[in-house]
Image (tube, rainbow, N blue to C red; front, side):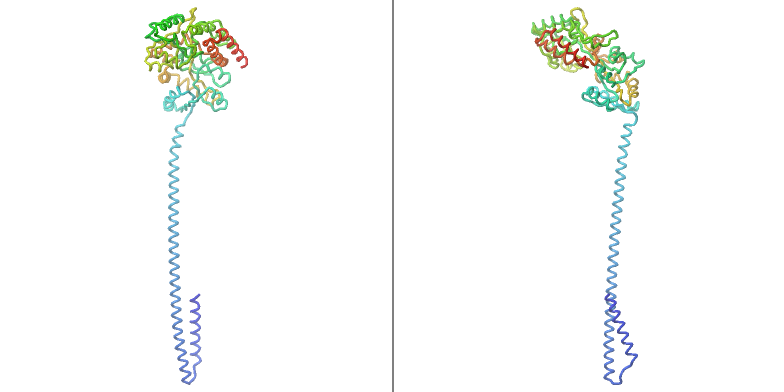
Length: 486
């Protein structure tokens, strides 16, 4: 704006000068002089105007140059910022790609880990580690992924989870739970084919319900008769002989009791059967009859009288405790103990010099038969992998190597005959010798009505609060009533 004013003034001055030249002037010196002075002044003015115009133009150029420099600097700064932003964006993209690549590898590994068929097996804290040792082998050899889960109270959980489609494909189970599962439609039949001949007959019978096989056994378990070899040279042949031996040791101060009892039901059942007692009667095919309750049978009452007589004579305690009984035997305070293979490790660690024998017979020569329990695998009938689970058991588990591995990890008489015949552990072999005389634990649903009634009846007998006949008759009545309500 300033420069335009200078240009305008300069133009006006020039036009004025030209006008004076064109018109001429007066002959009078005074006027000529005046004109010359005016022209000189105008020249000075013109010169000053020109100088100011030039200065203004220079200032404008300087300002323009400064503005250009500022603009260039701003553009340079913007370019730098854009370059930095681009670099940051590229770095972020590179980082994202790196993270994506890092994520892809584990995902591929996980996919590989679960690639192929998967079977879920429920077990307990004892058997789960055994099965876990087989998982890698099955994955490598057959492409089957085993998911082994330790489930507390798995039987109760199975009743809930299986109908909801959330149960396992396979469950490790004791055969005496079989009846309830079959009646509820929760377990599927299994055909062992030609391999059935490799299993002990009693183990197959254990998983047979209503003449159909519903599980594949792998081991059996039963009580046996332990005796202290430092106190007893030869185990007694009868229950009466056992009393005579124990009483003699008590009189000599070498024992505090004839025998230590570990419980009131399962743990003393060999003595009940030795006197002719039974829980349920059986039909011609060996199936248990829930209408034939035997707790008030003559033989069962006789065994109760025998126990109450020992208490009255001060030969046994009127209470039972599993751990206390084992301690008494391990310390040499009692010469006899009824126990299972699960007690072997603690007995060996204690250093007691024990032997294992069959049970003494009853007063009339009856065989004293302990309960026989069978451990095995059942298939969830509501699983989506029923056929795969059955094939897994019959083709991949039912062989010498796997059955041997199961035995080695959890020693107890094997249900697989080739492994059973090779057992060189004398203690396990001794339990195996008792097994054929054992009585299969009833697996019918009615058995659930027995345990809670049987136990208090024996407790009343040992504490001499009721006679054996009264306690057992009342117990049998309660059981019959409970079964009728099922």
